[in-house]
Length: 407
Figure 1 (cartoon, rainbow, N blue to C red):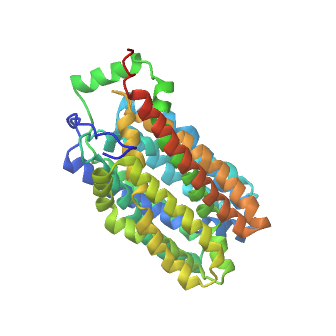
Figure 2 (figure 1 turned 90 degrees about the horizontal axis):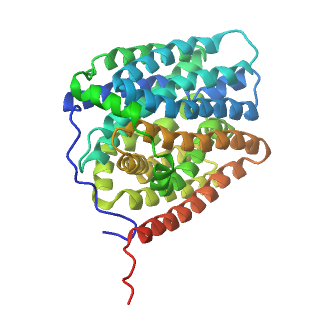
Figure 3 (figure 1 turned 90 degrees about the vertical axis):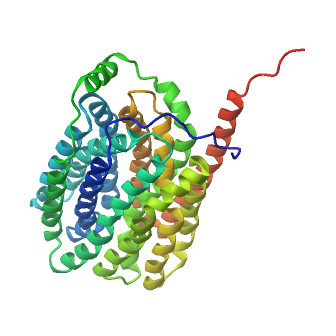
């Protein structure tokens, strides 16, 4: 055991999530990823085609993150109260049906509000899906979270490439294709099993009556939040300015799509292995190493002018940083009190997405002033967050040691 880790929990897996359920969830999540992958890389270019600048792009992405953040805890509570499946299916259906609204002939600032509403649906889906994986319990939970991240990338690898081709002919068609894939994902999630019977009823009653120890949960989550919040800031930076940055270097829409795909390929192929790595070397240690790798790439990207090198670096970045997601989500899952898996995931994601919302807004504004500053701000915040996480973990471990006996 390292200085920052404790032995993994040994309690038995929670009943109700068998292999069929897991792979159904992963397949539906992959289809969702394809729909999102068509849409997210092209959105900054769509906004620019409507006359919006980088600051408006930042506002739109910040609005999306705010929407996700606002939905996290309610989505987690609903998943604890009514079950994972109803929240997953309902959220995906609403998400799919909102895509065509982007094409309405309204002022471009309308997209800020629409993105908030669209992201509310996505935000309700995320803690429910994470809670379903968290129900696995046992020592291989990080592998399951790694596979969930891989299924995200299965969509993100295909979506941006084909989306880039579609966008080259018609930017608006990207949103209609996104609708189709998310509707397919909704249909897939209908095959998830519903939870019935006395065990489920008892769990619902416990959710209704048991208080949620927010302060205790936040303290358990503190080191992971110190890493996740600057990490989400970095993701917001990429989402907001990467397409603009790459096209400023001379990239085509197709090359923008390829750049997102090359980042996702290692995560797609190695996601399960990354989860095994986390299970072997510990949650916090794995998270620290992979999050620091993000800081390195944020620092060097503004110095690179070759589109080909920027695209190829995505393969390296995706490989070195892929343990971050399963490490953080597994740590969060293990911090959850009994019966509060969804609310704990929702609490963690609310704080993370709050940081992402600020990051999207700041990145968009900084990019208009100095593109390099947008990248370097994220790198500095990650280094600070890592130092804070190490200190917090040491304090937590020290607090658990028994006091020395008095003479």
